[in-house]
Length: 271
Image (cartoon, rainbow, N blue to C red):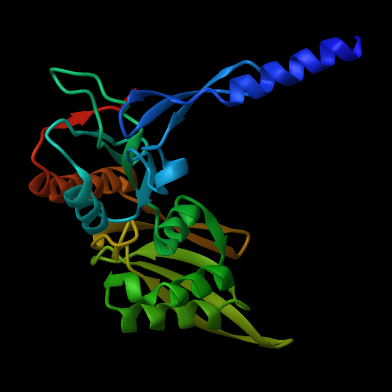
């Protein structure tokens, strides 16, 4: 490239820079010629120049119905759509959904994502399993706040008596007229002698545990399970329909939300 060509390009660039911006939308959008021969659109109303977003976007996740309704009340409009998904335990509001007359972006969303409580997770983790006496007794002691019937004091006594008999060898079991189960055990005190005792456990007990953070406690019946094998006793329980109780709890959360929104809740997930 000759020096003459370079000079011509420099002059052309200066000439383009001298071209005044053309207003497309007065006070807002301009077309500006650049030094490279391009045309750039400058939007003075956009966030780059105003420091403010032109619309709401993003997904906000909350953990209880009260927080959901608070955010919903602040940001919803007449076209907002709400969806529930019982399998995912979620409620989703599309705050800028399509209206009947016009399309919208659908990218400003509110999600209620329920989280299982630690207690609920622990009860389900041991559901249907048989463990040694000491582990089972420790579990009952840790879960005393959630034991309803028999009361916590009675269940603590049961847990302590289970611990006290861990060194004994169980010889038999029988069901009492009340439905309780009695285990007879022998504990060796000396090499030549032993002492007999018994351990009585109710057939069922009732717990009250909140399935989700911020939710009410729900009652469930647990049926005691046991196995007596060669003098060794293992214990456990079987919860009656825990997932049904979780679904009932979700339905109650959904009912609370339905009272606070002004649109029908759709069953499913938004696109």
